[in-house]
Length: 168
Image (cartoon, rainbow, N blue to C red; front, side, top):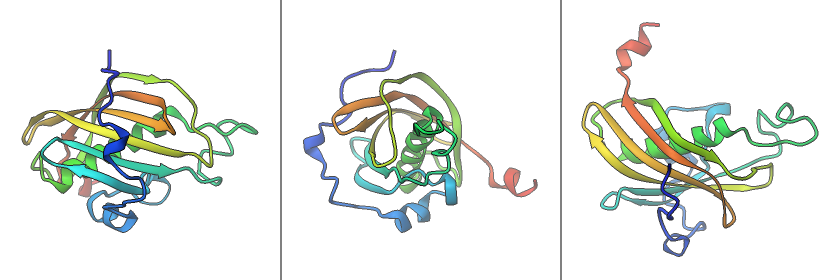
């Protein structure tokens, strides 16, 4: 089961103090267009292995018409993708794993505990748990809307060789 204790006390970061905007995130993360699931990074502490960012949920998100018609709910897999992108930002910015590209390696103990709808700000926190350079990184994450925990779990990142992607 995922650890339910807070990764970081919300009093330790300021959502108005952006340390990386969308352009800075794009410099680190490769996702573009509909797959960009971060709006800003507001806290990034290498020593503690903790990062905090958010995604402002717009009315015209690619999933809002179909999930669910008349009652748009952010899909849980997209919440997990936002968490993965936050973890990836932290790992790649600080070269923790020594890879040009970081990919999804798996998830454990993921729980969806609330809803996210257009107009919400999804605040995501992540904490490094274990690193094996050139092999994998394990982190835990928590997603909030306001003070409500809406999703949490553990995520694993693995290096993806760029030559493997470029040959396809």
